Image: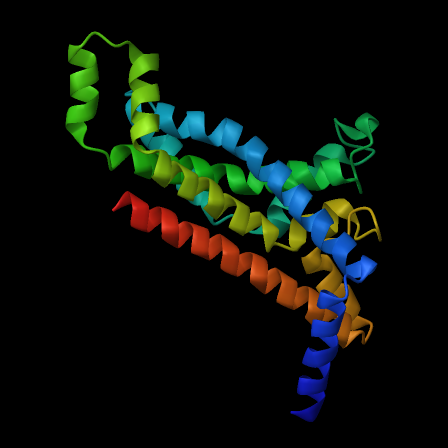
Amino acid sequence: MEFLFASLSAAAGLLTSGDPEVTGIVWTSLWISSTATLLAALLGVPLGVAVAVGRFPGRGAVLLLLNTLMALPTVVVGLFVYGLISRQGPLGEWGLLFTPAGVIMGQCLLALPIIANLTVSAIEGLDPRLALTCKTLGAGLARRMLAMLSEGRAAVMAAVIAGFGRVIAEVGVAMMLGGNIRWYTRTMTTAVALETSKGEFVLGLALGIALLVVAFGVNAALFALQRRGT
């Protein structure tokens, strides 16, 4: 216990002193995951609204696919994207492997089905009279979708935050596609794994605490949005 308390004290010192290594890793994690979540939201929210509102052949298959992809292991996503952006892959000439852009691409694919699926649930959970009223007033499909998106904005924001929570804490994609390069693609999760394996327990613990703080913030935001939506 003495070792643990001493490590916690040293880790707290690293965090409060503004250690450049810790600060750089935390910042890298935040901006990569935020960018990936933003891209996933730009794709996933319209997709979710379209699936929720639309009635088209194969809709059940799309919903089944989205539900399945929500539980997709991160290493599988990393493997798939690695095949796309490696030198032998179709996107190899773009030089995305072991860059932040490569990690963003993989994390975007992780967050996309979560945001889309939860958006579907958010829109389908609205009062069915809303869509009927919009249709009665002569609103087209696009206007009805915008009205429903506006009405369910709190739940949709919760879906986006859930997507961010998924990618900020993942390690497989960040490790496989980013390469854990110092000052470039090293994130909190990959750094924790690396530093702990090297015996740098204090640094790993400091980053673990920072990750917990971010996770707490994500869950607090989700809780606030859910309370607001009820």
